[in-house]
Image (cartoon, rainbow, N blue to C red; front, side):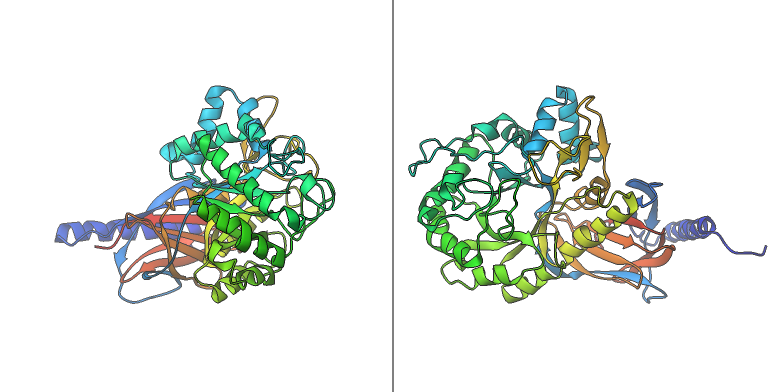
Length: 478
């Protein structure tokens, strides 16, 4: 027979050889190497987290070709997990546009692990309104330094019930909370839109945070992490926001919020920055402050400017501080499935974790067919899922599949381990608490790539189609 061997033919040869070797080993009484289960998603949607035939590892003392090397002996950060924000908009849709059985099914799919659930174990809520709220509100709209009007009632309507249901499904879920603005009466603008927090209100605003955390806890909503300001170097003109420079943030954390939470026995960890990769000097300035630094657990990052490598720039200076990636949104500026799926896999699922992120978050968990509801701000952002507000139908977007490649398989407490990938591939790997290996590989190119997956002296031959991501899962070595 002449002619070129097709991809399908090559795959058949690989699988056939593996089965033949397995049979021979069994007959000879040799130990049987484990197999790896495989799930793939392709940019052309021909595969959507589709399980593929398993790969069989074989003893292989020498590298014979391109290989993705996994080295469990070199481990790095412990993972909190992956997920998306339960914004006011997301919670409103989940609580009011879905029937009880639809709501339960969706939350189990997103936060559970049974029946192929995504297992989201990290989420974010807004303290008061963001652009993805029904209107603009704070938790203390009446000007009063004693905060007598403080109330989380608005969050108790939709957000808190949604978080409670998610925690009931996944008790490992960690929750981050971030404000978009202080109450307007504390600011130079007199409004939740634009302006800066007046330093005279630093003690009052610290108490505002303490009351939020304790009220949320009273409603069975944990606060594991808190940032003091979403995007503190951006002053939006149509929704809540607040400029807050690094010197002021350091003063607030080091002299007000940090000591107050410590003395009150509140365990929420404080994250600085919560903004883009393009200004690593801002969190570096905060961490250089000797009074603030002990109270800052880590730095949070967004995707809308700069390069993901900024995460490592800061961690290289302060290796004892955690790294979290806490916001990025898909949207109709990149409507194509392949383009945004590949970017999300490359930059967030692989890139941010390779640059030390312990947790990785998308922005809205769910939006409707009109990219809302929202009150100002982005008019064409995507949620991880789309909920049709008229029918309750669910549409799973490209970010859903990108995050699923990690969240479904990487468990809380997993450790990132060292990888090396050949030209044309990108990879990140983890060891779950039970010893299970999880490897995520991306081929963003236009041609298939044949390679071996190698751990120590065993390997498995495989091929990754073009513009495709795969997750490989296998057991520990004997």
